[in-house]
Amino acid sequence: MPYEWHDTAPEDSGAVSHRLRVWPHRSLPARGFVWFISLTAGFLTLPLLAVLGTMVLWAILPFVALAIWAIWLALQRSYRSGNTLEELTLDRDRLELVRHDPGRQSRRWQANSHWVRVSLREGPVEDYLTLSDGQREVELGAFLSPEERRALHDELRHRLHSLR
Image 1 (tube, rainbow, N blue to C red):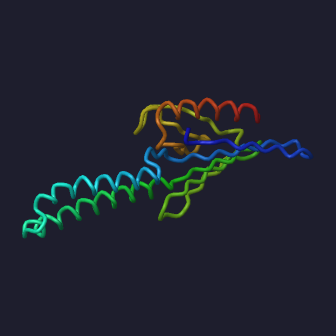
Image 2: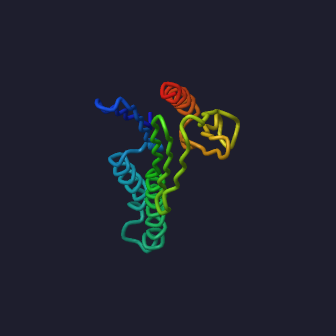
Image 3: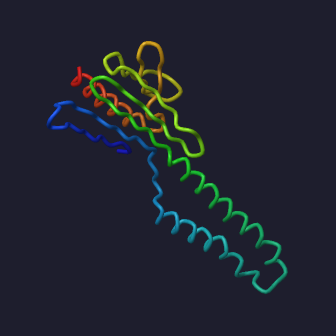
């Protein structure tokens, strides 16, 4: 799953703290990216062998290069959006959610963990996962799949309940 929990419990204080990191899933790893671009370039240049040595090659070559460049650029943009990260820190007194987006300032939300409620509801995505303190509501993991949001909802409710 594209999220992980880190639990800390200092031995001397007895305080429990939970830290959650959530990130978007990427199905094409860096090595797969290299293979995909290489094979795409190879398959796009294969028809050029028929026109090798003619003037037609120079008419078609810029469009092939442009297609490869556009695919490269689209995949790089997708990887940049994959650098989004949400970090949730939860302890007995406080819940803090920080969202890091590439090219933007981090957004931060804090609340008393006793008053925070976790809910799944209809929204812009199926099983919209939200945190609310009664005054303000924020989303968590909008880039996760519905199954992952449901599982995260159950885990987060359990951890909040264990702190109370």
